[in-house]
Length: 251
Image (cartoon, rainbow, N blue to C red):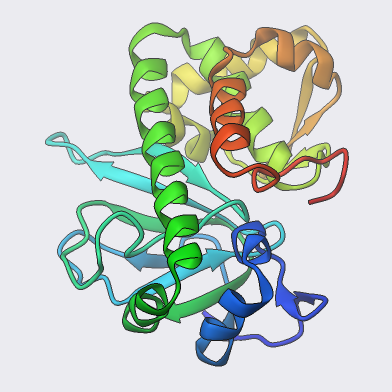
């Protein structure tokens, strides 16, 4: 990851959780924020690492949580974009990471030492409350992902992941996912993922490009998707209104 300082919106990094803070709360952490560029496959944390830095994806940046399995495969559980943060959110930090957290889509990140965030929380009830509510939303995503993997078809989950990625890129039609990455998201072999993609291609829903998908019919893609994304967005709106990305208003 390389240093970066020019990808800000106004006076704040383009992260909706940071933008949700009031001016006084943001001032408590602003002097300690740094910005870097994240590249695909950059590892933010591996299992067992001490969690000392909070990473805030900005703009189109996207990270994923990967859980290792006994067969050697990593299965991705949830995606986190500019609506949130990873590292030291649910815990107080400095505990060992349980999963691998990896950059999925390239872009800017804001970084904040967990110790500085904890010190700011101790000074501000409202700031502590915002991060507690985000932790609730993060857990809701994990619960929903568990249910989705148990009851929904590969086709539904494929459509869901692509829709979720589109939301984080302001509804752009090109989603930078390979067949291999999609298979990891789904927790299936590459051949299974490729068969689903071929079906979607035959139905005119998307096309494949080198290292990406071009969505031709987002309406049909949404119809083929399960409702898990909508459930998560609904919870975000109840708990942290305006934080989950909405391509229609560009947040």
